[in-house]
Amino acid sequence: MAEINVTPMVDVMLVLLIIFMVAAPLLTVGVPVELPKTAASSLPSEAEEPLAVTITAEGVVMIQTTEVPMDELINRLRAIAVERADDRIFLRADGAVPYQTVAQVMGALNRGGFSSIGLVTDSGGPAMDGADGG
Image (tube, rainbow, N blue to C red; front, side):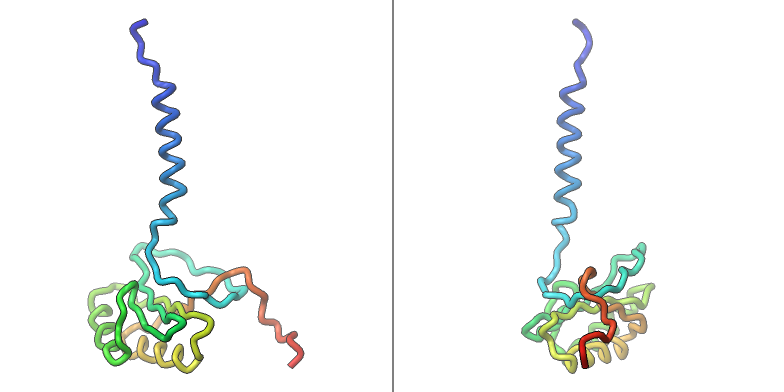
């Protein structure tokens, strides 16, 4: 028999493909926060990697995965805005963070040169229809 049997090789390659397809979404690095639930749909994806600012439950502000003191946030955002073609930024805030802190960070994002701010939430939560009795 002078032919090479490729069936075992194809089987191994398909198994490896499935392993990589399952493992790839797990490799995204981020800061763990408990996002609020909403019924909003997600924004369409874009070619440039989205910039995310995160506020943890302890009130720590992070750009991507780098912790940034609140007094340096505007200067760092201005430096980043110069390098980016898109002025879109995503704000992730833990549900336990006071609204005042979120509003202060949103103001800093705007002063830092980002005019399109997207609030990141978990989808599938209850809709806000005003039927809460008050």
